[in-house]
Structure formats: C-alpha cells, structure tokens
Length: 463
Image 1: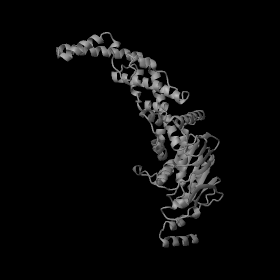
Image 2: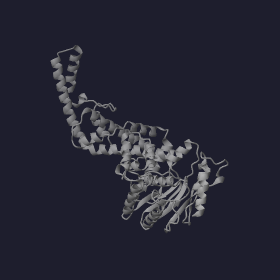
Image 3: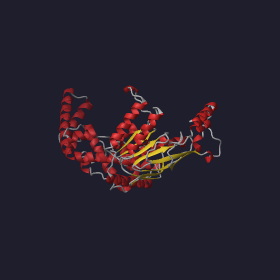
Image 4: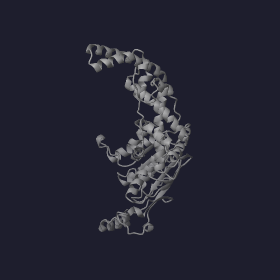
C-alpha cells in the first residue's frame, strides 16, 4: 500500500501529510505514491537521508543554498505527460519545449544548491546542461523558450520581411504566405528538437522524479523539526518513549489543555489494554498506528525515542464501522472486519489495533468473542493491541492498564471542563484480569443525576 491509501483509513496520518509543506505538486505526488515498506535496508537509508536533511535544514534554513533550492522547487511543474510524450518520440510543441528547458535549468540550479547544503550524496540529480544548451542556442541563460533564428537559416530573412510588411500594412496575401512558411519551418524545428531530446528522455524523467523526491525529503525534514519527531531504529520489539498524537497534542495546546505523552512497549502476540472511560485508550491505538505507518513510509515518528519492529501492514478496527448503504449494523461490519484480520494474520505479520471489540452486542456473547479473538491472535506472529471493558477474560496474554483518575494531580476542583488535568495516561503492567470500575465515579464528577448513580451502586452490590 501507498501513503495515499493509508490517509484514506487513518485520519491521524492524513493530518500528518496535510501539515507537510510541499513546494510543488510533483513533491506531493511523490509523497502520496511512496510505498509502505518492510525493507529494513531501504528504511535505514531513508532515515539516514532524512537525518542529514534535518541537519542541513537547521544549519541553512535562512541561508542562500536552502532558499535557492526551495525557490527552484516552487517553480517545478509535474511534467509526467510531457516526458512520456518525449519518451515515445512524440513531437513536442513550443510550450512543451519550454517546460523541458525550464526543468533542465531548475535541475542544474538545484544541483548547485544541493552541493552547498552538503546533500549531494543524499540527493543526486543528473546533469542536464546539454539539454538546456540545446534549447538555448543564443545562450540567453533564461528559461524562456522561442524558436530562435539560429535553429534554421531561413527564419531570420523570413521574419524580417514579415515584420516589415506587418508594420507597413503590406499585402495581406504575402503576409499569409510568410506566416504559413514560418509555421512550417518552426514545425520542422520542433520535430528536430524533439528527436534530439528523446535521447535524453530517461535523464529528464530521473531529474523530474529526483526533484520531486527532494521536495518530499525537505517537507519531511521541516515537519520533523517543527514537531520534534524522532528518528526510529529497528529492533525486535516496538518501544515508544514519549509517544504523542500530533493532532490531539496541537488541539490541546491551542486550548491550553494539558497533554501527556505515553511510553509503551509492544511484543509479538496480544496485549490487552484496560482503563477508565476517557483514559485515552482509543487515542493510544490511533497514535501507535499512525507512528508505525510514518516509520515504514520513511518518516520520523511523534515520540521522544522510538524503536520499531517491521510489519507487513497496519490493520485496525476502531470506531463505529456501521455501513448503512450495505445494510450492515455496527456489529456486523465490525465482526466481518475482525474476521478478515484473523485470516490475514495467519499469513502475514501485522500490527493489529482493535478497539473494544463486540461492545455493541450482548455482554455474554461479546465477552466470549473477545476471548476467542485474543486467544487466536496470541499465537500468531502479529503484534496486537486490544482495548476492552470486559473483565475475567482468562486469556494468557500481556495486559496493560491506563492509570486513570488521580484526584491529587492538580490543585483545583474537578469539573467537567478540566477533568483531563486529573487523568494519568501512563500505562502499568497489570496482572489482574479485571478491568477498573470507574464509570460511576466519572458520572459523579460530571455532575450526573445522583439518583441514577446511587441506584447503580446498589445494583452493583447485588451482583
């Protein structure tokens, strides 16, 4: 799968891409077509290039080489169609020849800027001076293109006569004849130039793609600096120190709300996460998924420190998957998705993120389904996180619990508006097979009907 596929199913990852500052449509296209990779060598090399680009950005952001390179990228047009025509020996028109000349000039200028940034090894661009010179026979040194007189000895005298007649209001029949002759000669020039340039088609395609990649790399570097992203390493287990959800973190900062990064370690098999309502379990799943996709698309990740183990794909069952158009209920849509995940896990190593499975069916069957799902996935090579409110699952797997409410965390009275100040989102290893019971406490804090919560407590005592 590619980045463009993941942004359709992961709103958090789409937020990441939307916050990248591309200079060109070609750079964004290059990003969207980047593959989710399980190639360890490619990822290490991509992270190395990105690390070098981050260093160059920090050192040169306000200096000439960096500014020159960004200026070149801002002028870059995506010439896939024009270059495909050139490669197939189609005759280019004057506009397309101008596009080729501009690309050759931008590539040549960018090469110099890249050398100045110390990124020549990371961002190799082909030599395009010969292409530019072919389209600049009068040595103007600018990107503008024109069928110059020097391309054909017949053009200069013809154009002089034509200009004199037009200025003097001469014979319109003769003017028409000269215009026809000029167009025919210019057409012949376009044929010759296109034929000569076709030998450079592969070089120009490489130049186009490398400049698009340069835009993508600089956008990744800029985002890494703005968001303080960490360069991941590869390991047997996935470990995040200070993992954050970029979208939620930015929202909280704008609202002057506290945001707490989370430490988490993931192993092969199943990890069940429990905790109170409002304790951030769903956000944690989404954060882990987004970070994995970022890492395996060659990006840095939103954490203070990160080690990742590679997977073949990230699959999720999070939120309300009701599909009214297909006549499926929330439960039906969810259970089909989970069934497909189980089948894939028997053949692939996946990162599986399942949020409160079977929560919309009756508790007895729901609990039995969660037990079955966890028992199956515990013996597969995939890494699975399951959040649940079901107690007593009896499945032999790792368990983590969100600490939840701590009344002494802030020196102000608890209100619905500031309740997040009193939630500790950190995770503890949990040997207990029972989930925390804080629903009624939360209801009290939120000022809910006292008779309702009192009767609920009586009912609990009768169970």
